[in-house]
Image 1: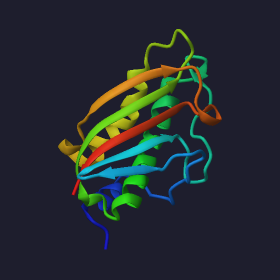
Image 2: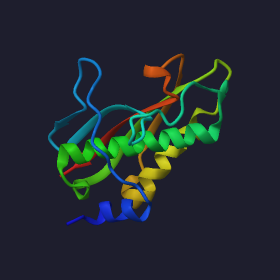
Image 3: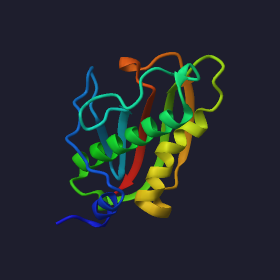
Length: 155
């Protein structure tokens, strides 16, 4: 039986697919006490294809970047569910860290990251409000446009 958060995801038209396996020497998440840290998730969709590829400000629009960040946030939720078994065990989204594959003069990374932040608030309400960092980077794995990591308080 689906919990409140999974029902909310269904209302939003979001289906959680199987989590992707790490592509290097790291684990997808670490839990210490009531803190769950999820490794950076790139913007793959359910078909394992990148939602947006390339650089923001050099071929990738802000809207495409926001969709990619939203996809990263979905992938974070997939890892949280894999870690906990039930998304209703999330007490609070503590922090998101966003990495935006950016042209040197691209300054709108925070607008791109709103794609991930907005989803967390849509899904969790006030407990989805979080601290955040957004950093423009020269490159990301597979030339993904966006990667997002997260930290959650859980029970």
